[in-house]
Image (cartoon, rainbow, N blue to C red; front, top):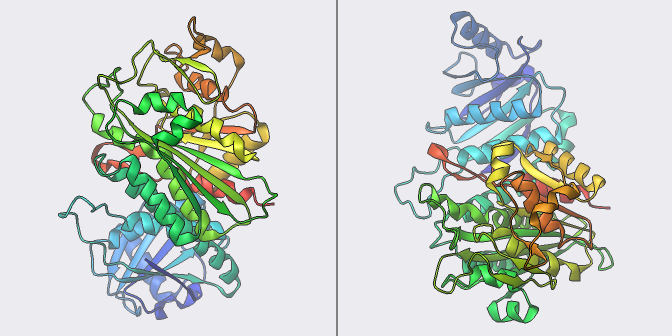
Length: 486
């Protein structure tokens, strides 16, 4: 979508030339000084009961007298909050999605100012509305005709709008890349496919990319990662990409993504119902890929290393079995009590590998546990951190991006259930606190740096009629990385 800015005051909206004029209203009264033609149409719609100044209400009015634009869209946000504004924009643009609107002009009324954040979220709302998956679905609806969005702003808003547009478009591109990767069927989105996506991104944006195959992984001693991968005929890939935007002396931030491109559960086989959604088990890898894209577009002054451990988890005669003991890259031995707790087995070796970069901080991202879905649902991602400052930065980034997380505990007592009679640690504990004990397992392999873990099992995709990847937490991660620029 083509995003533009255009200078126009609220009292001169009737002269705006576009296929549709969209007005997003905050508050329970029409603003003073609103364009006379727009105000008259809105008052008439309210009087007739066709529109209310209540959050979630949207109305499309054709051929309003006095307006140059042939359509007027009224959308009420209710509160003048970022979240309400994004929802109203999405509702308004959705109302135009199936019509003949190619160019929409959008104005806000009742908001304090056109901030960077408001512009960013407007862009993201528009891209959300326009996204259609069609790679393996020739019968998918045609792309929406809406192809251009002009943001109407005052003379003093230009600087904020420019920054918001840049950030919104970069994060939006990252979210779309993450969604596309996650939505591809598992026979398309293989570990090799993920590696090819990172290579293509590296080529187009000047990133350093290295892809390790099984032989290289064996040489590194990643016995835990290898154990998960060996039941599949699809070859594993260990992918490392580097964005260098600061001096070499600046310690990098490292993002680690879980890339299980299909999770059958292995020998501890999952129930058949809903197993198709286990193609989304590479949501962590997809979000790291998308964040890498956003960062490469924005070019912040920081160093970033993106690590993706990618493989399938399949049952086979040679697959890892409950009771097997494997040796991780760190040298710690792991008793595998449940092969469906595989994400932590590939992440632990990736976390050990991250040590070589002498990182300022490491954040791993994974669709790790159903327990996190039970705890937090699909609203907030679970966040664990070994450092209070790091936790605060991630919470703030999530709030700023409207991609929120919630800090979960890491008390030492939760580690008791991971004790094993036959290895240094077991890969699962009891049923209680399953997301926490999974994080405690990972923490054992992240003791040499500041570390955080995001469990996105509830937020990386949606089920039901809206089934598909969400692209979360690309927004959170990108805002976090921008906050780390010194």
